[in-house]
Length: 80
Image (cartoon, rainbow, N blue to C red; front, side, top):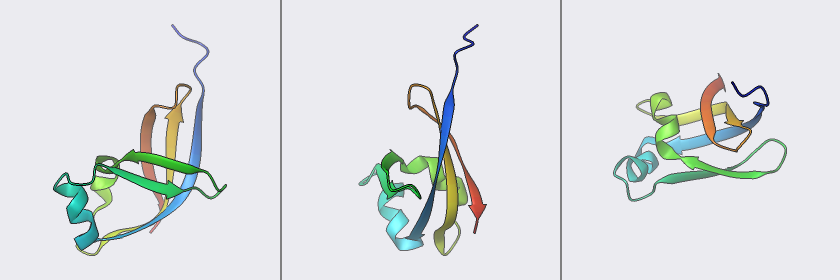
């Protein structure tokens, strides 16, 4: 068992219209790049936010969590 597991989270805002997300959904764009609240740039697979897609698009403040090796653990919606 690995007891040295550490993870970190970052917050970011996202505003992608449904039409814009269509390019991600169709696979022509695979990653989303955002600037976090602490001014870092991160990139993650567009599929990681697909569950938050509404008829209007994807909007809100999100929190992303990475493990100690910077692998994506998950994303959750903080405020719509």
